[in-house]
Length: 307
Image (cartoon, rainbow, N blue to C red; front, side):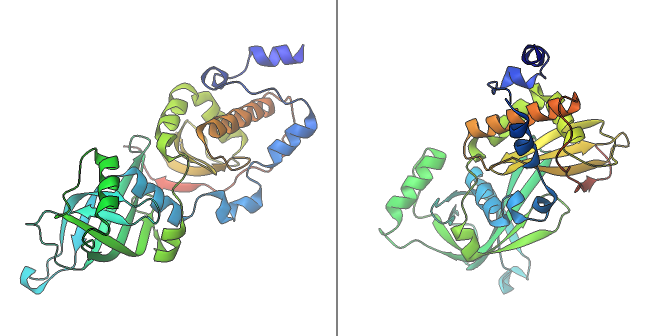
């Protein structure tokens, strides 16, 4: 009878995602709940992707950026920046930039700044790639470059305009007005883009549209804070968890990171983890099970007012 009662009043998330089997024993529930953000995880870099991984993800999901060169004497020491299209070598993240012949790109020391708008612009994460610009060797890289360019833009690249930016270091910034993290060239090249990147934006939009009750419940069940929650939105999801923006009645905005119980590698795994966490949060809220895990206490204030 209890199983039938739970099925009849589950939150709306069961309508969006395939319903998971109800946990069959308290032992299973305790194991799942204790895996949700224990205090040690808050101090661990494994709670979220590294700055190198985030940078690789930004580069994979973007195709336009702002290219800038160092000032030259004849330019009266004025730096110059302009928009460009670029492709990325998926093996090591090397940017392949298309520069028009009439644009001043003779300076070898260059930067490429790339933005990624998340959740319809609620957060804008970015990375700036610093490196040395050079032309690809004739016939050696042309076939690979043509393949990468055509895959990204659906057209052939004009090799006369193609340049390669050898990465020396990368500055990754999570959002406007925040401190950045420097990434070495070796860490950047060895990192991999997030496996959820191609459907993360769609999944976040789907959850915010159809599962707001679950998102609000996450803030109340998994987060330990004095902030009164008037609204909440999921901002981004990756293989290790998701970020939520919490809005207070005073229009203050806070960001909280909620990890998955375990790493996920595809859309099915992300939805399965979300369903399991939604089910557990609902059971705790309805007092079907006691609160047997420690809540997340770290919130980051990201804005003073909502505009």
